[in-house]
Length: 265
Image (cartoon, rainbow, N blue to C red; front, side, top):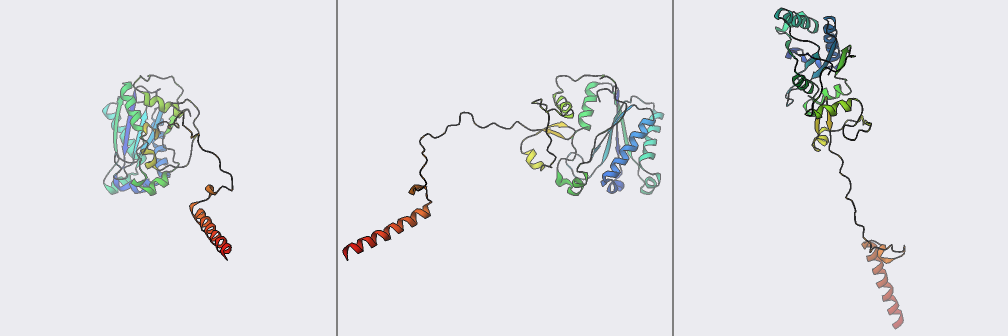
């Protein structure tokens, strides 16, 4: 994405009436593929798509497609024609006419690396952060590859990260399979982990659904070991439990009583 400057940012929001059919990952995959192909045919060389599923607090399923591409300023007529072609490609006209609604499309562009960086961070952040928001949908989306690239990405970077972009630097390393702190290869655990366990560790969101956890606290150094303990022999009375020792004491008392009784008889 650092190869893109200027960058266009397109957000496509779907009407409430068609969202039930968009709970299927195959439908989501098909829609984003159609969007990428359309933009490629219109001359865009680099296209990145990623779905956001919910708003900030997960009140309801709100799918919207984010697109980052190598676009810039468009005259009003060209922008209107682009939006119209997207609407026709992603939502059949019969459905749009039947529900009386159409896709909402926002188009922005920027040459500022700072603004581009902000868009990248926003688009790649996790939007489905709690399974309790919609557990059936979470199960359906498990393993779904969200962010997708299309086009030719063989150019050199057109802008650089600054010292304030440490979080995104960490994400770049993760994308390369390198731990952003230790620099060692990452060994992935593919088993899902409850979000409550992750959140309890105060994770740092580095974007694209990745979170950086604090380092595991090492055991206390110089742990003192008691030096006045000795290993008791197997038959030692003190190695028995309290219950066993009570029974032994009773048996000894009975044996002593019998011995005393026999000595006086």
